[in-house]
Image (cartoon, rainbow, N blue to C red; front, side):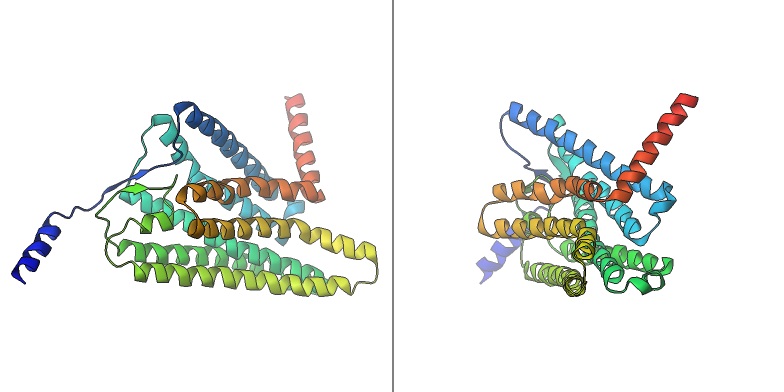
Length: 323
């Protein structure tokens, strides 16, 4: 018994706390890493610019000061930060060949990434509710979706995302990191980080599961109920032209919802069934490709956005000619 006590004391005294993590990222020869760097740099710049264009259009064009476009502007603003919290750090790691990240910086990155991911879930639910009111209650739309209603929906979306991230990170700070500091990912994601923790991780894993279920089920329930009511309402319309027009106003949002939730589902499925190497590849679609595609999906099918963009381009050309 005394020997066991001495062994325990010896292990505790030799236990070191991890203060720095090492992001494995994408391994390979230098040429491969440079090609990855070039590709992701282009994607990052393109994603930021296209989302920034939508934010500016919504802010400047008074014709877009409607609930649908205010939500879209918030989504684009969110997507800019969503890619900015992971890609610049990954690009810097490849460029400098220094994959270290401080413990505090790692937690901050995970906090912001979780916050934005949860906020996007609720923001997409708010957009689905907006479409429901527009199609199922068109005569009461301006009454229901007043400015204060839109503001409250936005505040709730961002606040719930903030609370989700705060809760998950609080449980993460209760864990001890005393072993390996090598994270099998290109950013500080929750699952590979928790795997490095020492001791009992049951509470953290259970809290993550419960929060994921709450966030996903609550937002998906709103989206599912909204589109069920929308479908029923559209099928009752007498003219086929009216049905097509109503469906066209929802198509873009539905595609974005399928991309976002589908990529998240595949990410977790791959993570549980295959290796972290496969999970890194799938995570790219969720954290990089989806924010890149969202503005394209909305602008290609939205006449108001295209008209506002053409108007802004013409105005900028006229100003240059006059100057």
